[in-house]
Picture 1 (cartoon, rainbow, N blue to C red):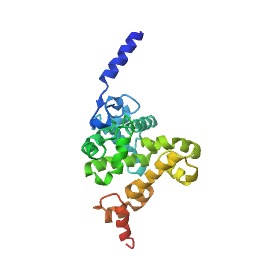
Picture 2: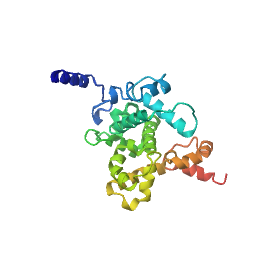
Picture 3: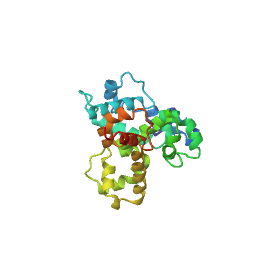
Picture 4: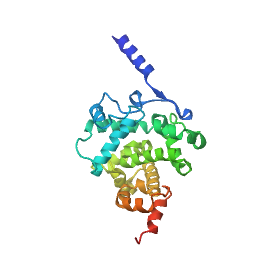
Length: 257
């Protein structure tokens, strides 16, 4: 019996799909073998309901489920909700994906050339999430296709800090200690830590400052402010390249209006 189990494990490992799109970042195994939420797990029925026309793999089903959750949160959809167990599966997938660029296939494909230019010495197997960290630091140098994928990761981390590998691992202890009753999501944990700044650990403080710098530079990453200013943003700043506070400055130019 033990021999059979061992053979099964070896076969599973042999057939697990791996990703090495960015060779310098290190080869990794993809979540569920597809780089997407599992279709035979907690999200099976939700995927059939909300992602029936989406091909499985490379985060496509996860993106469809995320869009459904966003529509429900914004009040733009009615009817069936994404189940709690599926939401947990989706979170686990995103947390795992955040540790290595090659686990995030759309990001790896969009940014492969930029990694070679700006982040060739970063390796996620040596230091998890180091390639994405480097890309975020170089975001203004990136072409639109890569920059949009990097923005997606930033938006996810603002929606839930647990999907940001560095931020989560640096601050999860602080959140448990200082913000035990805060409802997860929508950057509430980070706002809580910001209000308790003088009690935050040094390692968490560094990551907290990094996220604040990112959200301050791009209006779209400041959830409350962007929601309040979205109509004005579309009116006055639609053609403004995001980042470096360009949108904020554009809105200030029209503040009397």
